[in-house]
Image 1 (cartoon, rainbow, N blue to C red):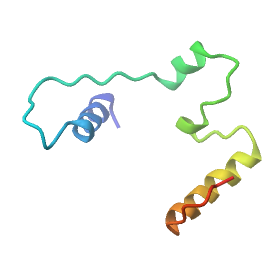
Image 2: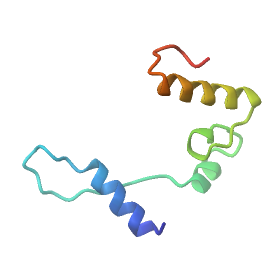
Image 3: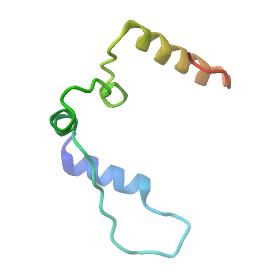
Length: 77
């Protein structure tokens, strides 16, 4: 997906639908590469990349999916 298509899709998702406003909208985001440059020793990009730092991370994300699918309000960990 090109950056322009992704930008258009994000804009469509966040554009207010039920208020009479037609102003511009600007999407600002941090790339994962720039996140790594800003926080080189931090391993917390798993939320964005799916690269979980521990086996327990995979267990928690899988349990979160099961909870969502089952409409369970229980904690994943």
